[in-house]
Length: 525
Image 1: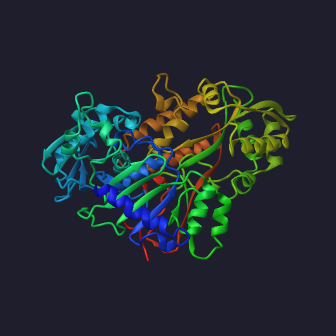
Image 2: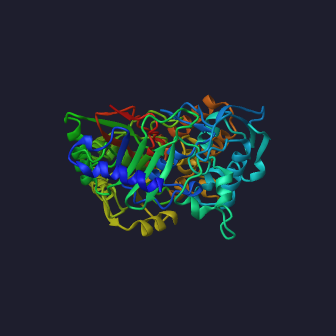
Image 3: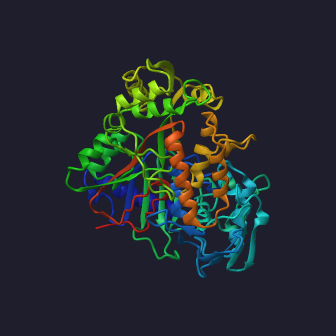
């Protein structure tokens, strides 16, 4: 009944005078976003950005991030320390932290939550069980102390990145889960698809699929009450409609706008534009197992042939930034190096040195969707300028990636996302290339492109057990430099996260990953 009254009150306010920003109550923040990707709100299954964004408001982790991924902040754990061998991390919980039920957050809840996530074994679990493979690795020391033992030593930065993953590392209220379990659903998975058992700054009021997610402030939050009483994620899948909703005052903040709208809002009074490089990589890759891409000079020639500016400012309309290394801006370990730019003569000289003075013919695979098909066309045009004749083949994602995983491509235009905020999540797929096993992390991009550098693989293996965080990050930079010079990728750009808010909205902090945006410090004047 309380939930229904809350929704009626807010909806009445939103619909009463939809053309004025005053239509939204001052204590309510309405965010326009495409919520269609949300499958459910079960934290152990949360993988998509928007799902994670919701989870991040209603659940807490042992650690958190406030405005950067370079600094680990206390969450439910107010402090922690590692054993001398780096295998066991001991977390000291803050006393008095409460779940939304009023129950206290204790070590039992932490052990229960990790046990539950591992038992459910949903898709995101690999991020956790690659280092914490069993519930036996998570032990209660006393009511406010938990020891977590990992399969390999972890540096503090890598530990924080893993413990900070939303959903699978969120801490749940055991009593609430127990109260809603059934014989065929012992972890209350079905109930949690639409309800919460968290301790975060907001309580879930309702998720209405393809309509809205409504949340209300949890006044007993350990970090202090959120500055805004109500938050609503309003489903507006069409980006043009989000713009109209923002201009009319139906929403306070838009998360999915077209680049053209972003540029116009920059010159429009009454709005603030927020931009930050996103956790994403768009790249061109070459199959080193097929001639002529087995020759590093040819790979370098392709990198110099591409007109990066035309892609970023033309095709992407400025909704991207130059990025040529595989750890994006904002992630610890990023190498800030952009040596490649279009140089037609240099590309021709490199091809001549490689034995291809007249160029060659090849094929570019891409998806039949924007902007990938436009990027492929630009690359085709750029390669033609240096004597390389490329035929474009457009395939739907399932067909294209089947060929890619089978190493049956010449050149491909593709993208990659970031799973967690540390270079560890990227060095393996982009550069680990000498595994003979079937382990997924080491049979991904470098393997698909048949790139072979076993010395580099050995360096990557060494990073995994390096406990000195500063040294580990320097090793990541060495790995990126090798791939930059010799690897199979021409990394084109990092996309921008672009958001626009009414200028009455204060305290909004954009993050490199939309998953980690926090709204409890946001308020309206």
